[in-house]
Image (cartoon, rainbow, N blue to C red; front, side, top):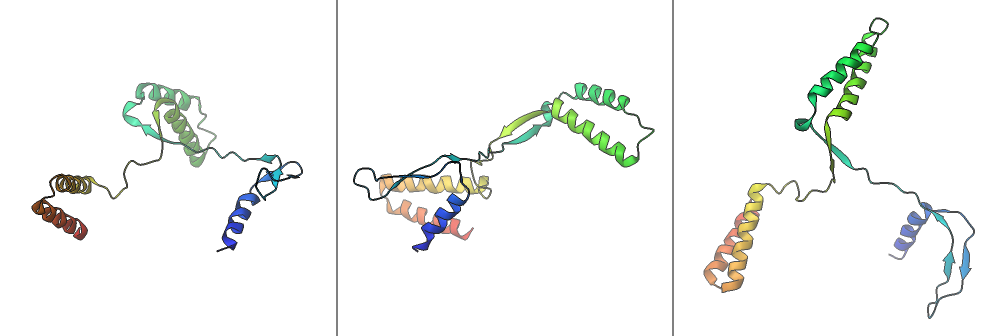
Length: 155
């Protein structure tokens, strides 16, 4: 177990880029550890936000006019079929980018994937029975609660 912190430290420090020399200063206060001073370059990896296209809110009239205009400007006689496909694909991608609304998605789900409506209803019923039993301390409600737990465990 003693080697684990060293491995973690190596993994952390191997990614750091030190610009200047490292200066060692005497310990502060009652500490027996030296203080290290250095300038470190930190790589900033921004979090990529996902975008979701909102096709039901797109400007399709503007998109059609844009695509017609772009296609009419293309010289079709000198291109092969695969080149034409690439041109059409870039035109359509540009049209989607300009005329379809985008929504930023945080990527964090409120509930896990396995928590469908049936499971959520069961959890709420279980919580209601638990609260009832805690308030009343009734043996009949305790039996209902335990039976509900057994049924949920079997599902």
